Image (tube, rainbow, N blue to C red; front, side, top):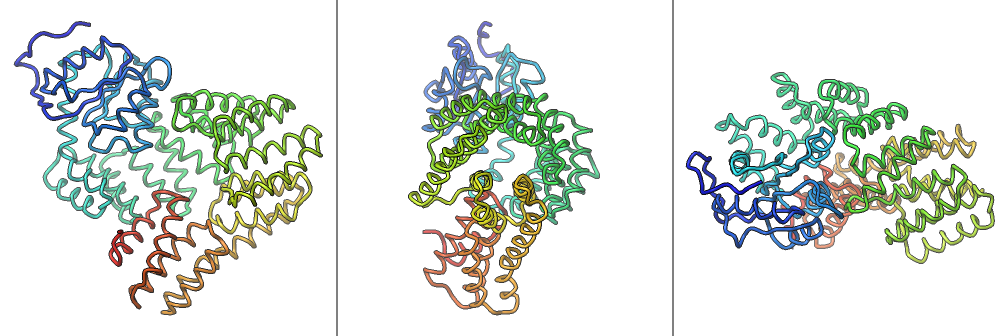
Length: 549
């Protein structure tokens, strides 16, 4: 490829003066060519940065706020372009105002679909000419400019302002109508205004059958626990739009919650054929196929997830743990222990070490080393006590499995009771717990225990809100404090505690202690499930009573 000559007056006007640009490409010649093109568009050489690989790119993204990123899809060894974009978004290194263009000579549907999954603003096919770059950047920059104020409001978490700005733009900007409606519906979902979101989405779908709109409707159905409606919407979306990957993932989750593991497996297999390079999707496929007994397919998916995760921010310990279980099921304990060693090398968090110990205990028990398995049970107990750990749901279930297997059913039931009461509305988790009871020959008893513990939790969760509705404010706060003590990782309890405290403050006035308690409860809920709409609404209400310091 050669650099074009002096600027041709027929080229579209594009002024990049004052814009900060990052070029990511492993070929020096390509970096030079793109830099020259950008200079011809008015960019200052001092604000054009270049990176030869993914690690260098991430280092620059941490230091500089870029307006434009041109990133090659394949960057030699280390992180590829898709993984750079993935990490940039995961770490919030780029904002909504940043224009990200993926550049590649690869034209296969697999490559394009995989890159598009992480939502760059555009995908530019090589060879790149100054004309093609100018045309693409000109169009994209106009779009970014049209949404600048909306993006700024979203970045500041002022969602009401962002919705109002969408309405203003919809009155005057016909060109970007579809994008504005999509942003507005997403904002309704984000703030938990599901009825308004549903009305808007249904209106949009009357005009045109957008896959994103139908998928958003399915999310609302799931929020309302209408699995059948969600399943129908997602199946229709996939049939009409076979490359819309978000619908596949959501449908697999829905089918799993409906206990249709074979159906969930089939959907994930289809999705991984379309886009095989997703760390998380391969891990999810491994988990599902392990449950359906397809051990070879599960092993292949877990190994793929581990390989893809080597340079990815989304690398997951669960893929290693899944592979460990497969090796153990295939009566290869030595390989299982070897994979556990790799896991402990890559992941050092106490919570992961806890899960790894529980799985290790199962390996020894399944290979006939009962004494070693029992030793690990003791080690687990000591590890939990010494580090004051509260395992996440996956870790708790692994511990319960080991306790059941080694004969301590009473302790196992206590662990499972806590999980049920903290997650009484999580159907997938309740199904996993039922499976643990089934394998321990406690199927009928287990189902009764699940329903009993779940019903207890629902009563406790809602008691404070009921008392508030009766005007019993002090009693409501006490009830929800007791609920949090009994169910410390129940997200609804945490949100309801904040709600009753805020309502109490509105009626009786605030104290620093009450403000802190409500804020701590909200932050604990957000840590369990970031982005929950009620968190956003309650934080806004609390901020009006006492702004953040």
